[in-house]
Structures are given as structure tokens and as C-alpha cells.
Amino acid sequence: MESVFEIIAEPNRRAILSLLVSSQQSVGEIERQLRMPQPTVSKHLRVLREAGFVESTVDAQRRLYRLKPEPFQEVDAWLAQFRRFWSAHVDALERHLDRMDESTATKGKTRRRRRGPNRERDKGETK
Amino acid sequence: MESVFEIIAEPNRRAILSLLVSSQQSVGEIERQLRMPQPTVSKHLRVLREAGFVESTVDAQRRLYRLKPEPFQEVDAWLAQFRRFWSAHVDALERHLDRMDESTATKGKTRRRRRGPNRERDKGETK
DNA sequence: CCTAAATATACCTTGACACGTATATGCGTT
DNA sequence: AACGCATATACGTGTCAAGGTATATTTAGG
Image (cartoon, rainbow over all chains, first blue to last red; front, top):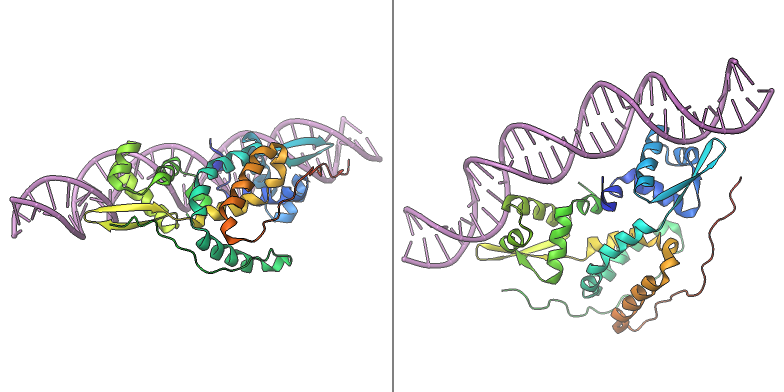
């Protein structure tokens, strides 16, 4: 369990991280909102803490967990090398994002995206 | 092996993806550059292809693999919700947005970027 | 056709990790 | 001190994915 990528590969851990975006939460609050058994929450939080994704402070018997930025930056840094590549495929990207918009439309406020004519693709690499 | 996060959790797969950033490569080229056995390369490429990270074209006995953008965008979309947390490093973020702006400038439309202090942490938990 | 090269797949083994259940630890209250 | 709540940890189990080795498939060329 060394890399940040392995950490975020686990769906429950991603759920926890997403929960913590809004504000810090206690173990019990996470447990209830995500409807997962308490030991599961604690164990995932341990992994997340050791990987630097979260930190905790003690509040009586409760532990309040909140996000830490560094590992996210690490993921972002890795992703960066591909940004150049996918901006060359903006059109496919736009189409993809349109589908994402559609699937998350329940959130109400969606960023509207405009649709343009297709631009040229294909760097002419085929043999 | 459903999610994109599980796919990129594997170091060898990340290595392959990084290799393909520069240009498309054959299995043998990947095998030699990464010094990993050929079946390993093929199997990872299969996983990557089924997850939409790469696609291949046939060149005689060779298969040329190249990147596809959509899954990367999916990772980026997930990462987006955490961006406000690491805006401590505004510089990298700004650079990122700058490149986004630049690369999509052909589309003409504005991409809004909030600037200034986003000092909005520590929501005063119950203590 | 037959062979060699490039790539894919099949089979097996192994190890990691996520889960459930049970139990331990810590803290606050009476 | 004793109890109860919140959280952590220990242990046993099952699953699944990655690696290794062997073999199959495809294609070019003689």
C-alpha cells in the first residue's frame, strides 16, 4: 500500500474522501452517512491517514478527520503529463464532459457547456 | 477491475501509460524500454484497452498502442472536487488553468477562473 | 507450406487486502 | 470505580489480481 493510487483505488475510501470535502467529520458521522460498519470506517481512515490524505484531531472520545492536500497534488502531478495529450482531443473531451453533465444533472446547478463543430483530430500517425 | 482508479493503481500500467505519452509504441518497444516480460506487457495492455486508456492498431505482426483521453478526464473530474483544498499552491493551479485556457482558446468562449483569496476553511466545528 | 517473429492467452500459484466479528482502548459521566 | 459511548485493533477468511511459464495465434517471408 505504498502509492497514492492504490489508496484511492478503494471505492469506500474515495467515498470517505468525498464526504470530507464539505467539512471535517467524526468517525460516527462517516459511519452513518456512508452506512458502513464502524471497523471498516476506522480501518480505511487509518490507511488514509498513513498515506497523508487525512489528519485527525481529538475531540473528547471523538476523532475529527479532515483532508490534507498533498496526496491529491501528487495525483494531479501525475495526471499533468497527460493533460497536454488530452487537450489535443478537446472535442472528444467535450463530448465526454457533456455526458458527465447529463449523468450528474440531479445536482441541479450544472455548468453549461457549449457544443461546437468538430475540429480536426488524427495526427496522421497510422501506417 | 471496474474503475479507472484500480487501473492506474498498478505501477507497471502507469509506466506504460507514461511511455505512451510521447508517442504510440509497439508491444516489443514497451517490453524493451520497461524491461518487463512480454506476457506481462500484453496483459497490462489488455486491461488498459478494456478500460479505454489505450487503443491499438495493427501493423503487420505488431500492434501499435496509443493513449485515449477519456479515462484520464474521468480521473481529473474526480480530482476536481478537491482542488480548493490545495490552492495553497496557487502557482501550480494557476499554471494548470492557464494551460487549460490556452489549449481551449480556439473555442473562443471564456472560461471563468475565480481568483483571489479562497480563505474559507475551518468552518468552526462543534467543540 | 514451413519457419521465425510478434503478440496474445491459458493455467497455476501466491500474496495482498477488504471484510466480518470480536475485543481492546480511551474518555467522559455518574 | 463502574458504566457507556466512540474509536481502534486483532484475527480468521475469502477473493481477486499480478506474476511466471508454457503455449496458441497471427503474419511476413522464403
